[in-house]
Amino acid sequence: MKLKLSIAAAATAVVLIAASAGSTERPKGYLAPDEFDVTHVLEPAPRRGDPRYETDRKIFRATRKLVGTPRWDLATQDADYTVPALAHDFSCAVGVKLTPQNAPRLMLLIERAGADTSAQSGKAKAFYERSRPFTIDKGKICQPESELYDEKKHRMSFDYPSGHTTWGWTWALVLSSIAPDRAQPILERGRAYGDSRFVCGAHNESAVEAGMLSATATMALVQTKPEYQADREAARAELDVLRASGERPTGCEAEAALIRERVMPSL
Image 1 (tube, rainbow, N blue to C red):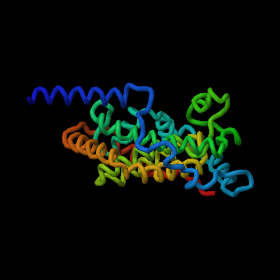
Image 2: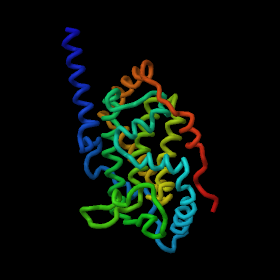
Image 3: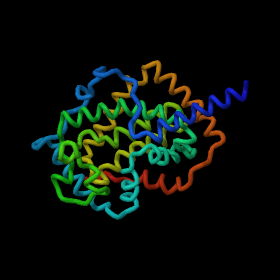
């Protein structure tokens, strides 16, 4: 009987790993279509004549001074938004090395929640059509412009809200809810992941704030769903075991110093 259960558990793990690491499509979310519309929650994107528009421009120009610094290198690392990359990025904050292989239930939970939060940020991007900062003012960015180009629409993708920030803040919200004793470093890493987007120059600072709000608002509804709650408990149990016996990440002190570094310029 124990052998059968072990085989079943192993088979389940293989399926979850494939879903979170081997698929090019994110799993289905927890919300029904048209159940929520984050554009009714977010402030409108800044437009010409809006003081926030000029503040975004000043922040973009001022943060170009970070090009080539260690904080720029972190922003370049954070531009990778794949599941293995985010698992690595949050490992120090959680206190254990995370991978799709050692935490498949956790990865699937975050991906399903992320399907909901990213759908909302995508809806808002299409609604507001805010231009990215480097298309308004000249300045180096930390990733190739081709990665931000919308091939289907034959134009640069939109800025507001930041999809990277929405995704990273989704990770922060989910992880802090199942490892509350690590909530502060997890949320600090989530905030820094968002900051990396205006350090990078790929997004305006207002888009980073909007990405955090978009994820928070969407997750407020997602976390009420019984299916999400059940998946979260399974992920919590998995993470508890991993934290008790898993490998500790390295380089955490250097990362913490970068995260504490002030990147918002004084205007």
